[in-house]
Image (cartoon, rainbow over all chains, first blue to last red; front, side, top):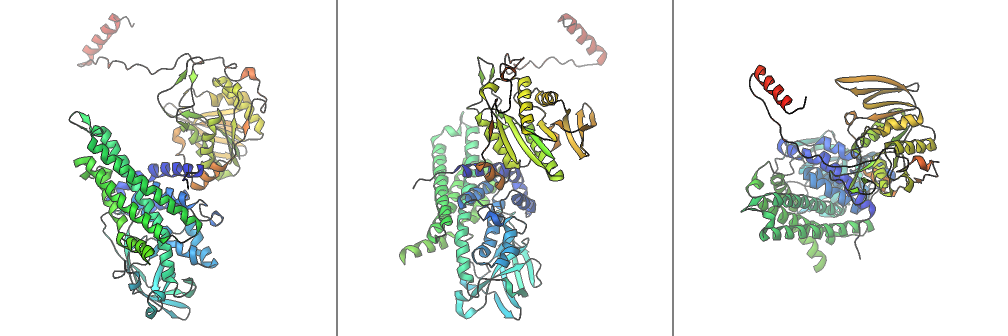
Length: 378
Length: 261
């Protein structure tokens, strides 16, 4: 099978790159410094049809294919990984509706999310339930026309700003994983409190918050799918979301590589630019190979997404490989910058900090390995 | 409001490659962009359309590769794009270019406004916009920094002059050439980009627009480019320091000795 970019892929990359470099990149350092959620970036993404790239255009989505979406995420992330994270968290936040929502839920929440009119958040992780999703403690009890939610979520990206969150809670604890359900909770619903905001190492603009549910009454029409389907939906959403994370990693790694190449051509030691020394040349070669391998694996998995088939193993591989490759790349890129790479004036300093999360969220590398080996050894 | 925007695809480089026979630019092989001032014109047209309704057509006179420039304008939000292309148009100076574009515009039918960037960054003459207005015998407002409003067939705009601006009201149809300061051109959207990638762009030839081939291209050009070159860096010159009474005497003597006056 030969991989070829279509004309549309090339045009979309050019468009997103120009936009990202012109609008997002200049703000990246400031967002990192001020720890502020860049709502203006969210509006810009919406204005340029980037909040629902591979979703049907008859409902307001971009109408493009999943490879185009990966390209868009990649280019946004190369300019500002925090914004890339907000973008993928938004997709994660509404994908459950795409997979299992009914028409009235789609009209009210999903289609406005495609255009960016509504911002979404994915609300699953708890202090005692990250890797072990099934240890979910948040409960949802049916009471008349409402489900009553009680529990604490944390590390929720977009959580404090989203117009709606897809919240996973246990409707039947005795059934363990099969007792999990997923609900749409609107911003400002009484009983849902935005708790403390996190002080992160990197992607600081992609603010994450604790979300506390105290007798939060959610209309029963906001149940997505049926009771007990939450776990299955969560897995499917996270699988699909892994392509986005892989694309983020590729974008960041490319940006780090580009900045290392530029620096290597300028910096002189012992009368020559460092690009003339084989040690540096070999590092650049390794970095470029890592980026390209990560990119091709990511796009391959993105194209699987289009077929509608389950691709857990491949998605996990792409996320695992790309995130770990991005670590190798930023490490070398910073090293190439020498002392300057340690200074905040140089973007590589921020990229190095930003990168680390890629191996941790949406399933740590260890979780990815569980998924992959699980597929092979069953 | 029906608007036609004239754009030009220009080389994105300060190093020009010149065909030694015709002394005109060799366009193929050099990375190309939409002339930046023309992007301001497209943006102005799109904003007028948002306010007054209507349509935005973008045209360019150029070789086949100029389609890329048109696609970029479509991606920004223009409704239609037409390429005016024919071997007969090659090598045109601003006289022949404005003639050809005027004929194309006549061919396209009704319009209320023609917008152009004030000048192209390769030729820098700023003559084509005014030339089009003259060929079509309609009003023109050049160096527009702001379009105020459009009412009862009259367009009101601010024209930059040294030290300020003139407020001018013109009857439409009219030609407006725009300054960079008029707006920030929007980035294309994803949907616009997809639409543009799929778009079929029609080509109008000399015959299609009934151009007299004697008046177009190199043949129809009363001027020709003799030489394009980067000027040599001049010396810094001499700075006279001291009291004005003394330095002015020194300066005067120097100028007289050098026989400048």
